[in-house]
Length: 256
Image (cartoon, rainbow, N blue to C red; front, side, top):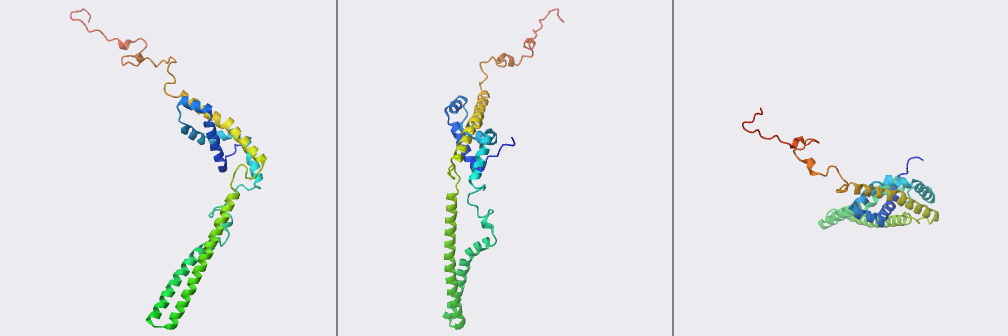
């Protein structure tokens, strides 16, 4: 066997659901109450150990991933592609058309306002009537162009949004997205193996270590460091010599 397969991003939610199921089981809940470990902390540890726990069900996951890839026609990503990602959105001219679709109505409206103001201003001043008529005509033409460009941009935006919504609805990942019983069975077999051989043993080990390292776990077992006499300031050795202080010398005694 080679290296364990890395859990795909589309399967992270299934892993989190399986982890929550194991944590909610009566056995784990009972151990949580006994050890005093918060359930949220245990869940975080389980999510962080995804590589370790998922490796226990690697064979089932490989089969499930292979069947899913085959059902998708060999394509690993069936979801809608982002506008900035690789795909049809990056064909030559797509970005230029998007920019023109946004700028054309704005520029045409600005030009129409400028020409109309100049044309009607010249008419009010009664000077250069030929130029005034030309500016007014160009202004109205620019205004029509701005209205048509805005309408086309709105229609194109609506069609793009509808296409993206339809693609997301048809390509949403799920256990029965392809309607394959074999794929559903492979997914269920992977989840069962993940819960029984991966997540549950890991959580039991975490709880056992937490209970063993909890304060007071060694009390009542005859610890040799439990007697306060050994911690006295005058203790210096097994013979207790440090606790015996010399008696004061009596006056007139013959001892030197």
